[in-house]
Length: 168
Image (cartoon, rainbow, N blue to C red; front, top):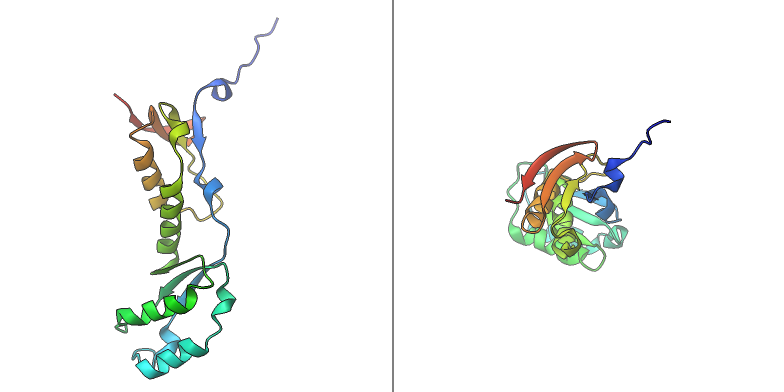
């Protein structure tokens, strides 16, 4: 008689959280204003306002947009605010920065609204590998949110996880 193989992982109380499951749909765009500047370095207010007024912002419908300037120009705060005012009717979110900062900001919104009550007093595994661009900051934010309620927090896969926290 052979011993029955028992999958202890599937029978355990471990709960796996995959941040990829919370990845919001929508195209991510880096909008560089360098080309809107005189010689790539000088913001001329009148020209900048005209370009913003004439630009077709509707092309960013349901997008996430990161505003940036890739040149070493000093950009006044009002310029990014003005662009955001034009983008606001169309986009899901706008930030000033790069695409990683945009993803971090998106996940901050997601995690702020995430109901974690179902994870109370349970051992949690935060799944590490993802095919979508989940920012490293999202893992930190999730762990911070779970720590007060979780029995334990691990990182990785159920078969090879790294322990990070255990309630005393």
